[in-house]
Amino acid sequence: MWWRLKRSAYSRNRGAANQKAFQKIVDSGQPPGLLAYDGGRPVGWCAVAPREDFPVIERSRTLARIDDQPVWCVPCLFVARAGRGQGVSVELLKAAIRYARRQGARILEGYPVEPRKARLPDAFAWTGLVTGFRRAGFTEALRRSPGRPIMRAKLR
Image 1: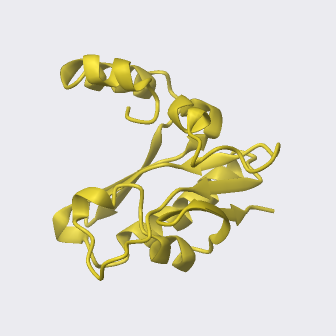
Image 2: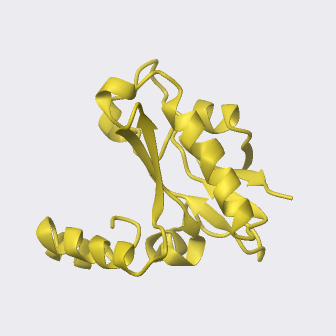
């Protein structure tokens, strides 16, 4: 819900209220993202939807729109500790490309971090890493901040 609510609403709804709001999105029938499984056990998740579904991104100066093209985006990824370092995020991003393409999207955007240190604490990698986006077929479209490029995949 971090990208879907104004910061004040997110903070006010912390915990159960945000979970209830997310459940309402799930119950609407519109998938809010994709799950990755390993032998029937969920090991990862990524949000994927039209950019307009994430109003915080729409208001961001760093992540402001590059152009007037309709864009879908992957604003966050999560991989369970046991699945990290095994390419789960790359596979989730490839699946997001396929899913967005099937929904009629022509561009899929992501906002990963590019750590300045060799190892970034996992808690700061929730938008994904540049290396994973590149491995999934994304290219850098614009960089307004040293550590946070806007990456795009063309979905023709």
